[in-house]
Image (tube, one colour):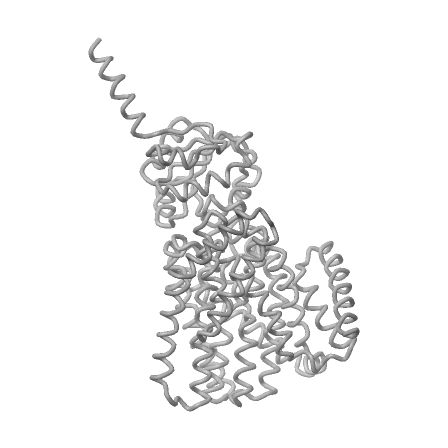
Length: 537
């Protein structure tokens, strides 16, 4: 017990000092955590601990909490609007990348068919932990390249399930294939059905009574029960822990507890993510790395280049080249799920141990390099693209904007509002979470951004503090309420004008700092009476 406490204290001290130094140098704290893991292994001779199942489980729950927070950003409506990004872009990226790396492993390096299949599948995956941490920190998750990267990552996390199943088939020479497939489909239906129909009611009930208790620790405890419970449920059904957490986050995204849950869960996510990256650092064998440096570095460069080329090509099918470039730089690395894939394949004697160690070091190197690549992406972009060619809907273009009007929603009413503001020459921007409407607005030259205004990060990116007014034109009452709740802290400095269609909607929004509520039916009735009186005169 004393030794464990010594390890923990020293690890904390090293990570704090390392991250303070790296912060001053503008380097991601991810590197500090990875360095901490490597230093601890060699300082205390913990080489036997680096493959500890318990430590890997603790680290994996960092990914679980990260996926839960991403689920909070991805309501069912948002996911429906992203179905092309998830299922088309994601499937093309994973399929083409896996095929490319399989062919290279089999024909160029002469590796067996089974091992090549496993290597190709693992290298096709990117790092959810590194990429989403970066995108959430710099608000890039709301830009088009960030949405595309997030959509592809979601598909990759889903793809881990059939990859792990495939390893089981290969280990058993394909025995009982039909039975395993039938069990997997049945499990998927059961998990989705129970989480969305039964789990949704249980989560709402638990959060409702926890919030009514007015005890912060009970509410936080309820959230932890939901996250861990959904993760374990998905795991027992044969899926990944992170998939269950992601679905739980999507369910809570539809409730009024969304913002409080996001704030309460953040410290746990950050702490466990730190532990995850420490376990990544512990996998680095410096002697093996030094002996095979040229092979590792060569594979690292080749994987980044060819995987980036595939991603760029996939994104080019529906977006500008600059968007494809930004997405490619963001996702070119190999992800943390490859560790689990290589470990399982080695345990089933499908991968040579030395080859597995070589691949693990390539993955670690790619994860270490990613924060540097992301932080210097703009420099690479300026070399390749003309100055001024910016990504469609990049919220960074709004930095420094003042006294602007924000129009929320580009439906029929939103289009008319934007047109009137344009005629009067009033500076404004439009935000909508329906991507087809965003594309439509871009074609007519409207300044529009893809995002959900119920998210505080989006409001911050829109420079809400400096806006003169927000006009909410949405029809969905629940979404309108969430957006007005998110706008409430700014009600004293920003005029909030909301379109309502019924007295029930007025009651829902009562008590919020809304400057003006416009009831469409009442306004039509008033105008009709005025016109009638005018004609009578």
